[in-house]
Length: 269
Image 1 (cartoon, rainbow, N blue to C red):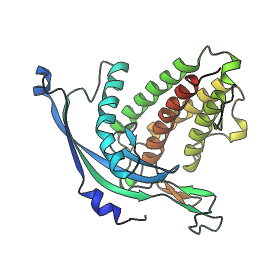
Image 2: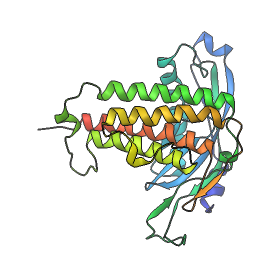
Image 3: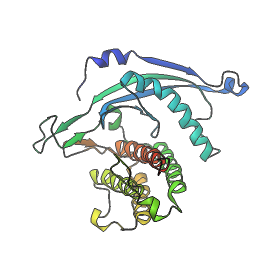
Image 4: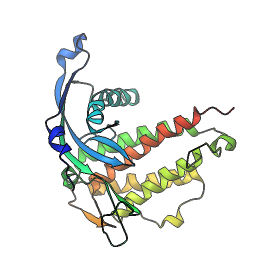
């Protein structure tokens, strides 16, 4: 892990937010410390991860802004969970103390694992937190969040005609169907890092909806079996664990749901 002098400034950074202070229910709430993993340079952007809450993350123009943005992102994440279930495990959280825990500087490597700006492989964050085996609660809540995000994705795209699914956009790499395929194949790839993908990528269904369903079914199958397992693998110069698998799978789908929303809002005239 590469740590910059920037880390010393950010490590002491703390944001405290008070939610719903005027609400009578807020007096019954609890305080929570939000541990942050800062990933600098993920696809060229600073990305702040709420390490104990897969699905809660924030971007920023720089690292400090990303950490600041994580506070409102947590509120939005809490509200989003509440829209999907009455059993919102964050409902009683009143105060959030956002504390920077770790910083990772993304770097690229070549085929010989040498760090070089021109390397074709981007090595994404491996936090100390990722060493921790996932617990039963981690798996249960992770599966719930994955179900919520998949419901949101399908609500967006089901019923869209082929004309819209396959429309191309200026300065965009994929159509909406292409983004959906990317979500499925990335999820397969994450599992493959831990030898949990189940099938070869070439064996995935061609139909994009069936592909999404098949890959997700495999993820839902393997996650419970990873509970408490002390598993870390190094693949292609990057470390992977069940916790990192869960963290990135949830983030990736949520991030691309916003991507699809942006494409759907793109002016067609």
